[in-house]
Length: 426
Image 1: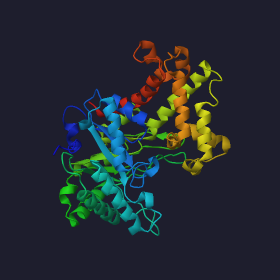
Image 2: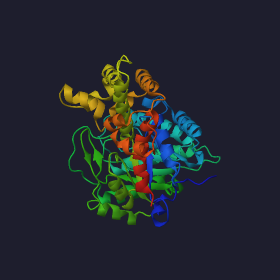
Image 3: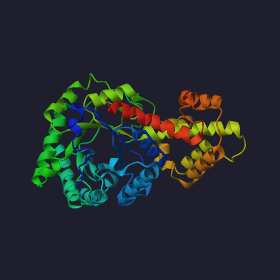
């Protein structure tokens, strides 16, 4: 049996090489291609994670089960020549969240089926998150009940491990204050996790695992999710402040074998990402920020295509995406506030990037294919790249990047992944 690549992550800071790892939380195929290309030349493994809403036994919003998602990622890796041995698959927020409108026992039964599917499919990083209340319960549960439910799911996971050469999973416990996918409103000051609350979370989970005879499984817990003071809303980003997180960071000294996992690190700067890793927040999760970069690049290419080939399409990509989103508003309508002009802007440009839910829609895929087909084989003029894809201009001018549409779009995502790699590698 091979060794789990993350099992010793708490010791990475004390040796040469990587001190942390980016967690790529996306099911967008081109995002995964860009992440593999950015990671391939480094010493890092590539951690790709799927959330409970994105992928589950019912298909989630991607339509994929855990086994489907595994095969999807492995297929991209094979085409890219990325070694499967360097891939880590993770499951995020595994718990009753997709079914929290149901009574707790029913929701937990469904969560058990889900985590069994993740474990059996060979996912080797499992985030146990049972902090949310179900029907008739408080919005957030206390530590004891949260830990008891998490241990129940760990018991199920341990009973469904595939064996063979796939190592047993490592576990992440706890939940984060930020709303998954970003807050809906403009945000201000954040309350960091209290250091003692982090210590209690660890102790309570350890005891809950022990009561189920899972002490060996708890020994594979590698991380605790906390709020280090980072978040993004529709309009703004709260940057990490190392000074404010000093006491929380120091709490790791009392929790040997653990690092902190930071959620909602999207849109942090290179410097703040590096500070997070330096302070022990060794797992940096990023999701909407990646597809935001992809959309940003595609809209730039969309404008270039309109300049080069006016009237060649019945609708621009942006026009097509506007129709797709307004025809099916369920994924954005309740998240965006303000008058119609403000909501229209947020549909396309919000940091929460809820447009990401629409890229798999057939009409959106067709519009994207039409854009790339129109620009296929075309060396895009440098002045237009400067105008509409300015962040790529210097690399094109220097010859480091071909002035081709797909290369430019992948580079936009790859550069963001490179920021995370820079933060994690010494």
